[in-house]
View (tube, rainbow, N blue to C red):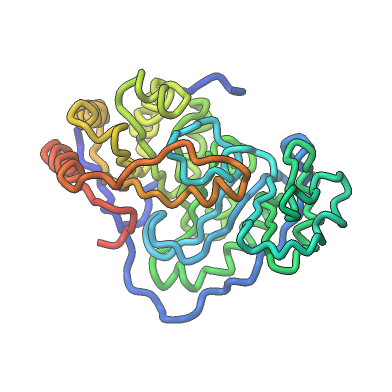
Length: 358
């Protein structure tokens, strides 16, 4: 294998399943945290596609000031919708492609403003007198969100045109320029909104904004390669090297993902590889050997980030009216070290933790 030419901080160098289904110093100035302009689609509406203003997509968050989603200071855009169902998923609001209502019960005063304003009758008072939402009736119209005096209710998912979204993230250009950063498109699975994603990536390139794509790689081959070519960097997540266990823990086959990884490698696309290390899932010796063998099938060697599991998602699930399906301790330090050692012995540059700074 030929080592990849660019280092983790360097500038970028310039199929799949069936179609349907590290930075430098920065200026010490305050990030602009004003809420971005957006519109609310109905949860019952079909997925957005193209309007007169161009491709439209659904985004559930725009996070500024990230140091863990590529080089430098980054603004990370989280697209809704994901075909995977990883049991440890930390972004449950990214699974469903439609907008969803999130409720922080601890902030609720029980005033009943949401009960009075809901046009669908989805919010009623429960046996304890507190508002309760019937999510089978809720259409995520957002009226209860506007009525809530404490911000206990929030709509996760807003519609953007590609042009408006790139205008929004371009406001952070001074921070990108000072740190070697840029924009990262994450999710969910951004490849699940291919037309919108490609329009965003191409608009970023036209405006000189460094754009990274954070993906599981599960998409039709043509989509994965086109998006990889339009991005300056692809952060490619590898969940498990064993096909049976990959399917068990993520709900999708490994084959198309591995094939897309090899296709991106063959196309000369700049890649960083990221492995979420999950206790009891992919931190044993067999998985360790499997990751080494999988990466040995690539033509080039790439930086590899090992991302230790941490239990921070339970509150997100509760706000969406769901139960977190996976609980585990943090990975044992010796197992993280053993995986890092095995990959380094195979010639890979390995980092532990998500932050891109050296």
